[in-house]
Image 1: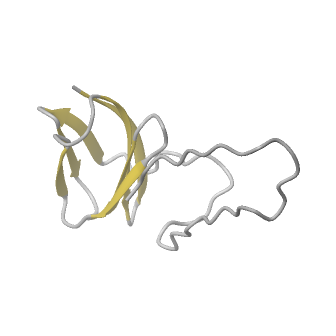
Image 2: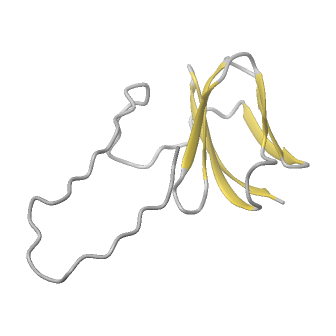
Length: 112
């Protein structure tokens, strides 16, 4: 689960009090640049708070949806079509990234 963390601390030197733990997702390939859309056979649309992902080529492998604050949800996908219900999410702009064996595609989607 994701939650906001807020705390107050007195001014001064506070070495070794806190640490940052980042989880590593080994299913995603590391990169040093921005992902390019390499899978032109994928369409991503939004209709009635549902994100609809279709692949005319290879089967879908993984989908990541990120909001403007950077919070993301990942899901495994299979087959050539995935429908994601966004009813529990706020209206706004989301970045949807889809992976297949042929490449990936990222698209900005507006959920209303």
